[in-house]
Image (cartoon, rainbow, N blue to C red):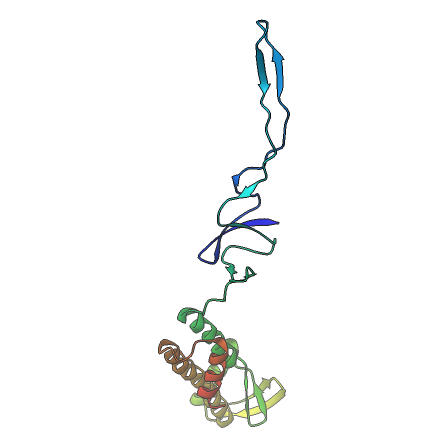
Length: 200
């Protein structure tokens, strides 16, 4: 068991030992001896048993109660409500959603194209080569196998990846503005708004 100081219905302090306004005492007998002149010398005065009294505001609580817990009118205690996430926290979550979508790949015709940052760089390099040499061909390893690509197919693949990435960032910008406006306030709302902003 623990002890909690509750003020204004909130647990403010936790103690593992009781905080007394009157400390408990055990009953003891008087111990005395007779002095040489016949007077009584009290060595230990008698003391009655006194029950301990917990200081005002302190209550006994279970071990799973911590500071910040809320005490209700019926005396029960509950965990504090989860604070709403800040705009910065929501935007950090949004950025992680965008990154996952951006790097999650896409399908171009029948090719399943990886769109992680490394793959985006390789696609750009192939696009540069295809732009410089209309006769350029290559074998491309997609997620679902090997594909022979000519310059036009490389450009088409690059355009699709660029559009995919741009759509992801545009959706992030749109949802970030909605967060700033107070229109999106939860992670679930971000998921829905981001999907809608991407068009799906």
